[in-house]
Image (cartoon, rainbow, N blue to C red; front, side):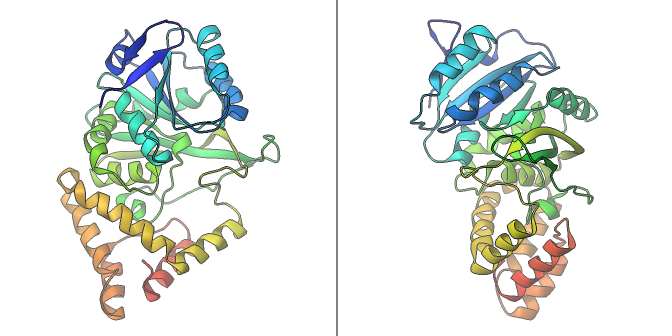
Length: 332
């Protein structure tokens, strides 16, 4: 499939390599913005990108079938505030996860770093700079992603509170059953991009792009750099695809969904994708996947023993209890 990007400072469409192969610095970050009916909040997000302390960036927006009038907002931004570095492509029309996988591929082979971007957040000025500083502590050959906490707020960006602080280190055993890195905070190095682009055709059906990235990077022996600082305002509203998970009500609803079988369905979809990328996984990760699969079938005693041997964990005690409850109810 050929992707065509539109550069708002030019009258001619550009292919993906034409956009990403333009002269950039070694610290260039390509921002990947997934859009669907986000005109109402897009302007605030774009202005926060323009206000980043790290200035070497470009933006690719993938519109996944919007029916609102977002194009003038993007056109004005591209022409006035970021000429020559804002591009638009059409998404695949299969939901937000597929749209972000599409964006990863559009970023091309020359981008040093890439950052996911949601349409309705507001980035704090040092978001990209903090991410870059963390990623530079990792060897270039090691796939690495940066994630951070967010400042959760209402639709008007008021009533702010920091997201949950995760104290246990990231790892594949955690990634298999929980996502601790919101996609709106994720920034990745070139080695991570190579891995994600190589495996994107095999990731069909995944639950969420950010959870998939966490699983794949850790499963392939990469690094996840978790920053306890908040780097963006995470706007909560009726249209959030996932939403925050920091309140007792939100966590209770997720436990309810777990017991109703949604967690099992999510695991089935993610495990199917992981099975298709086994050549990229470490032997340890494959062993964890196989043991976790065993914990999802058979008699109760064997399921519980397999879960213990799998070495999977959730970040908080309440979540760990819910995991074992799911095993007891055969809802893993």
